[in-house]
Length: 253
Image 1 (tube, rainbow, N blue to C red):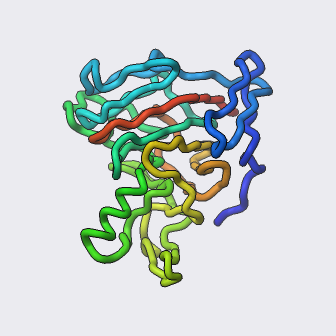
Image 2 (cartoon, helix red, strand yellow):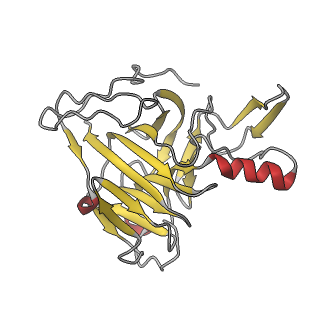
């Protein structure tokens, strides 16, 4: 893993103009909002690219994605260097979703209903059940994905993975490998995601063509040499309900 940035496991700095936010639930890291330049995002900050009015709704500060049809909600403003925090929760076992960064305009132009963003860097939001279902159906662990925050380029976007392959251990200590040296998909160094029905916390830092991900308070994944390294932030709709809340963003030089 590349050199870690300053720890943000329990403290996330944000704008003084924003009311302090304490993450809900005793098992989530606390985030005390101080400093300058942070903005809290609501559904009004996003464009429903190719969903129905029911695909993206908001209630009590929670952005609710029904997951149907597949598609995306794109932030109205393009970004280059930024950091963000977001909490997410799946409502369906083996649910799939994601946060896209640096999506070019072409990723959404005339995007048909039921189609995912064409390109960008995806920070995956995948329920633990997705891996569990693969193990049960195939009789072996997946060798190409995890449910703990994979980061990878989509379509014409490019990224050099920090961790293109990694060895984990299953419950009885047996090692198994995920990925390969040539993979553009980066795999987390620790498996920290919580299961369906529980809130997870992501901190994402995207700067100078490099993306880094913290899952539930610890840096675990990322990649660099991203192309393009500017574009739109997007939330993904992919099959089942996923909620997002406490989305905070700060643009960087």
